[in-house]
Amino acid sequence: MRTESRSGSRHLLAAALADVRRCAAGTSDALLHHVPDTGDHVTGRIVDDFVDQASDALRALAESVADALASLESPESLESLESLDPGAGPGRGRRDGR
Image (cartoon, rainbow, N blue to C red; front, side, top):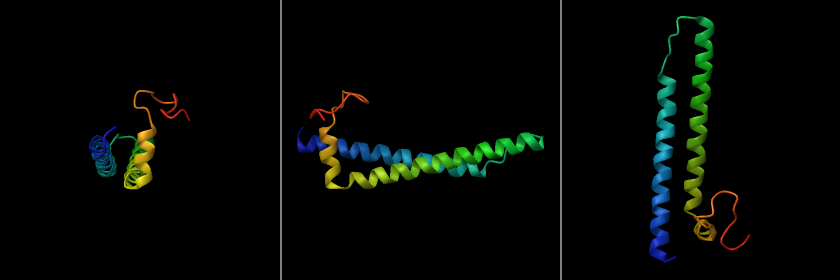
């Protein structure tokens, strides 16, 4: 793979991850500002708990993506990306046989 291609792929990956991070963080905030009115105290409590859990999950996703973005900036990350076979899929190994 040529250096320009690797750099371009890395840039595209970083841009996609940044979009995911922004979307997850924004949706988490939007969920917290939503006040569902079910008309029933018990149901309302269940919905509130669900909304809180969904918001927490989105924040965790945003934090995880932020960590991935930070690791993309390290020199080792490009080497590990190069060793992966893009067509192999999950659990099918890497190009270098490991």
